[in-house]
Amino acid sequence: MAKKSKGQQKRRVEFRKNRTQKVRQGDITKNFNRDEFDVDKSVHRERISGKGELTRKRTIVGQEGGDGDNAESFSIHVDKECLTGRVLRVQGLISHVEAPDKSVYQCATRRLLKTMATDARHVVAAGDHVWFRPSGEGEGVIESVEPRYGVLSRSSRSRQHVIVANVDQVIIVGSAAEPGLKPNLIDRYLITAEYAGIRPIICINKVDLLDPAQLQTIVGVYGSLGYEVHMVSAIEEIGIERLRRALHGKDTVLSGQSGVGKSSLLNAIEPGLNLRVNAVSRENEKGKHTTTTASLIPLATSGHMVDTPGIRQFQLWDIIPEEVAGLFRDIRPFINHCRFPNCTHTHENDCAVKDAVADGILDTRRYESYCQIFAGDSA
Ligand SMILES: Nc1nc2c(ncn2[C@@H]2O[C@H](COP(=O)(O)OP(=O)(O)OP(=O)(O)O)[C@@H](O)[C@H]2O)c(=O)[nH]1
Ligand SMILES: [Zn+2]
Image 1 (cartoon, rainbow, N blue to C red):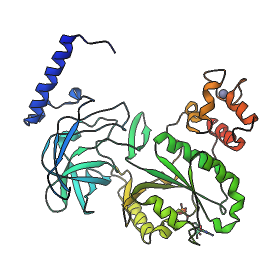
Image 2 (image 1 turned 135 degrees about the horizontal axis):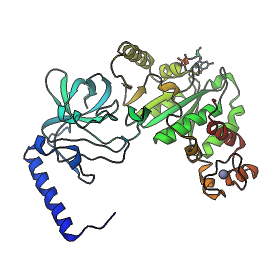
Image 3 (image 1 turned 120 degrees about the horizontal axis):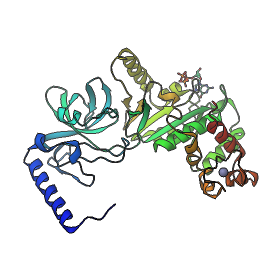
Image 4 (image 1 turned 180 degrees about the horizontal axis):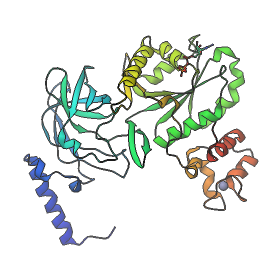
């Protein structure tokens, strides 16, 4: 970036100061437009109630980071009493927002926030942490949206569509038998999670159907890569308590191919949870004409299960073949040592990845899985 002269810097500081003061005085509409956003402005909040539920928020500006949705935050002045909340789902213009006391408000979005939406970006998405102002019995208005992490999105016609934001982890469910384990499919889910920056947890269900020792090699490979692996049986209730603990206080996406036992697992983890997930899914089906994204279903203790139409088979959205090697934890360390900077690690000579496979440092099956994904073959 070009260096600014002292005069320029001073003018800039003055400009910011003036603008901040104007915004503080409530002269919002005149001064608030997208071009004035600054990345480095902070958000100030102060608690005014003992319980921390009612919070006064004084926000000066929002911030916008990068071209993705991950680091954005839009805020406007809120000098009224607001509550923090979590968007459980968005249906049309209404967001269902869970307050700290677990009650759910149906919220509209403040018009000023909406003006900050671009064609490529919805202002409010399922999973968003928001501040909202209650405006009557079970209703409210969303005043600001906190920065996002763990975003699952899909782009269509070069527009990014946020499916769900602020997801902590994805449980990748496979089954030991009936249907048999498909490690290549697990690899696909893994790189999608790596791409989205969401922690993957591997869960192998139906271990009652075979001798778990048969899975030792495959589990060992994933374990050595630092992935958490759960061996469970929904029917025999093996390993369920540990899985339940992994969900506690977290927002979790459950994914895996049909028949591996996702519904059975939800039932084992928490009675009634699968029913609630299905009920919301049916409701979403009905509301197809509205822009339905995902739904967060509150867990009995704390945390949410995230259910999205189609997300159970979520795979490789938007990942281009050249990015795949970098998303394989075990391949990643070798890719800079290949002779050609644009090495695809498939047919080239002097490929550090292929050498590592030949030397037995890299698992052959994982490498083959990489080749399959790179070539765009289905699992
Ligand atoms: N032996 C055994 N069978 C199981 C276990 N978990 C689920 N099943 C059976 O596997 C079949 C599929 O289970 P579901 O829970 O419906 O699987 P799902 O992944 O939700 O399937 P979809 O709804 O199609 O995505 C059912 O017949 C279950 O009874 C298990 O731990 N052990
Ligand atoms: Zn290579």
